[in-house]
Image (cartoon, rainbow, N blue to C red; front, top):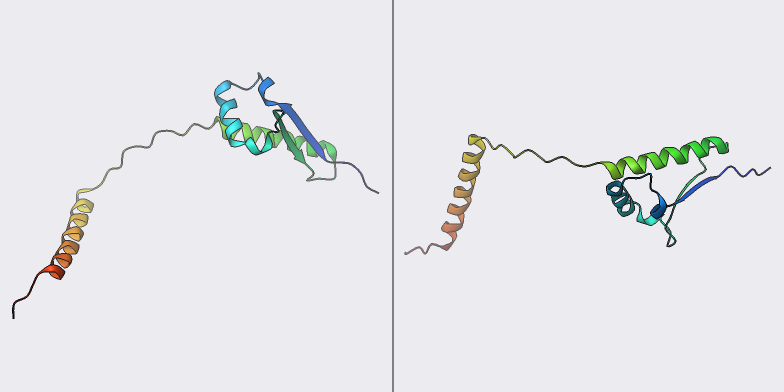
Length: 109
């Protein structure tokens, strides 16, 4: 009563002209453990009991991997530190500095 429903998808990464080069480079970096020495990218799925659904799942996984590779993070805006925060930080530094100065001063009896 065993049925082979596992789906396996393979394609050669170097021959994938349908993926833009910038995305392909990032794709290879992020998924190097899924690429064989021959250059084949392998995706498998055996989630369901139906091979058609497993094939669909392989396509979904491939889509997700390509989306991850195509993500370009934007630049972070510069941090705006309020005047109150700056003053509070400087006060703490002065307080800690005074404590350390107190340790090194010699006391005459």
